[in-house]
Length: 261
Image 1 (cartoon, rainbow, N blue to C red):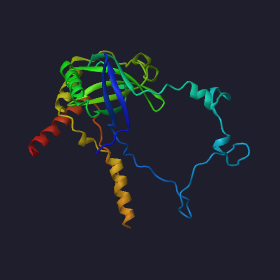
Image 2: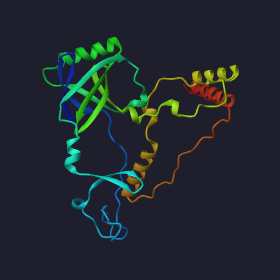
Image 3: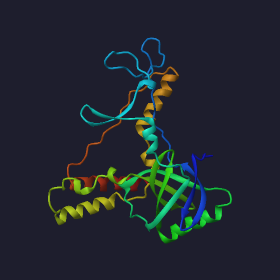
Image 4: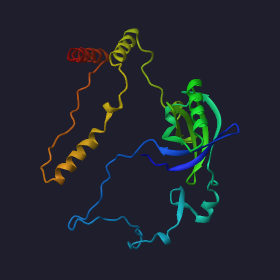
């Protein structure tokens, strides 16, 4: 059973719904330890004075921000504490917008919201209202000394809160160089549309497992049992050089899949 990582109060238009916050994603990356080559004991990272080469101490270091090459502004702990956001348990929903108006570039991390005991009916009503109206809320909250903006939306009977990146973190398309080549010809457009249609099928997340991580885990399991690991590499398929060849290859593959079915 998932455990709540934070508790707060969802607020909008005078309504208060006590909620619990749950992580909706989990880090599955493989993390390695660094061992000494001879005695196989774990190595540790340490601070080193670049002038003397001696080990430093966290008690004797200061935080600084480099505003120009070699020019630093030193910040004291009490100065940083003064600019931290105030403690709060409120998740303030300022407005509701049409679902899909917040682009995927803004998404950072999703969380599930669950109701506290006694708030289940209000929670369920809000989730259904958002789903029926095809709307999502824009919310702000403070958690662990950090300010967040987020999108509040319904996912079935649940409420999901997706932390968003801030305005200056998202690169606007206008900052990119426009793609060259001009307007596609009618034949090229028709081929592209046929290729898209040929590859259309429902999204299944199990089709996109982390194959590298699986191979590393197999390697670890084999070595832990004293077995010689197999040296297998992922096979890279040759890519067709044009839309026409890609369409032909895709249609041939689709035909083979239909025969197997």
